[in-house]
Amino acid sequence: MRKRPLIVLFVALCTLAPAAPAQAGGLLSGVLPGIISPADTPSVCDTTASQPFARFGDHRSYVLTPGGSFEPGAPAWKLSGGAKIVAGNETFYVHSNADRYSLYLPAGSTATTPPMCFAAGDWNVRFFSAGTGTVRVKIVVKSVLGVLSVLDGGSVSSGSTWKPSADVRLLVTNVCGLLATDSISLRFVPANSTGLRIDDVYLDPWRSL
Image (cartoon, rainbow, N blue to C red; front, side, top):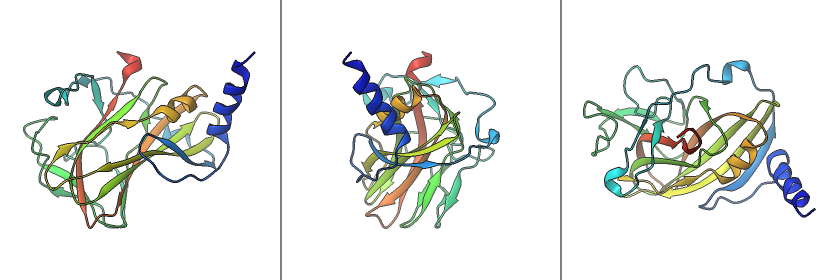
């Protein structure tokens, strides 16, 4: 009998529209009603897993997000406010020693991944960053029921040199995933920053391994 209030709470988190301040750890930022185009759903899911953060003590397997290496020929991200791909790769070359590019995010810019496959159990996102300030990660959840939710994954600090990010937790996204999440996109927004770069953005597909 006690399970019903929890179910009601989970449904409310994914279907209502409150606004909440961003905090690390993954809080609900807002939910927007909308109609989702079939074109938003990936036709093929990338299942090529690797361990890009093993040298940093993280031995989980990850899948590169669409276009997450920012190399020529990779799927294009939606960029605005001066965001652009620039020369200079993250210095660990975890995706490939041949990589040469990264994404620059000046103040006031945003960058959004193409829609990617998502299933309940995909728990973490990690990437590399360098520059001043922090980058806020938002998760755009696309539901098969035609609901567009924008969740706040928290803010990740950046330093003067390239370093791997802390985990961006997808806890609330997983709650929504239980309610028929179809796909997600990640939106990166610099905060308190005069400019920073990100590279090699990975999703931990825990459920599929």
